[in-house]
Image (cartoon, rainbow, N blue to C red; front, side, top):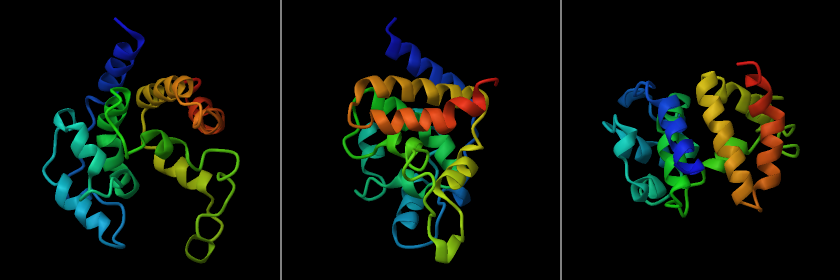
Length: 175
């Protein structure tokens, strides 16, 4: 068995018991069209294991932005489908690595999200809140995925390593 096969098994095992968040809890925003398009396309899709990479890579409606508009619960539920599709080199547009690392890096982590709307909330604080939903085994699977991606993607490697150091490895080191 290859390391990538073991990594996919680890991801499947860590996320196998995550419950579908429900049709009413798919979108994390009500601003713009994309959250509603996402809701329409993912409604009733209660088994992430059967979603095709082509669907994931384009949803919603060709924007390839689902990972940006999922509720926290939906992000957690569908993330393993994206991770496995990415490990299969089947994604061209959707980028789970970016969504797991942006805001946890040294540059953006300390930046305020939108001071007029969120006050002093930084990207790091927001990502810590968003990712607190992951169990230790899910976080370990994410860490393993990110460590693998760091060896495969020279462009994203610095951001991945900073995210691992600044967030992913530290909170779950003893978990």
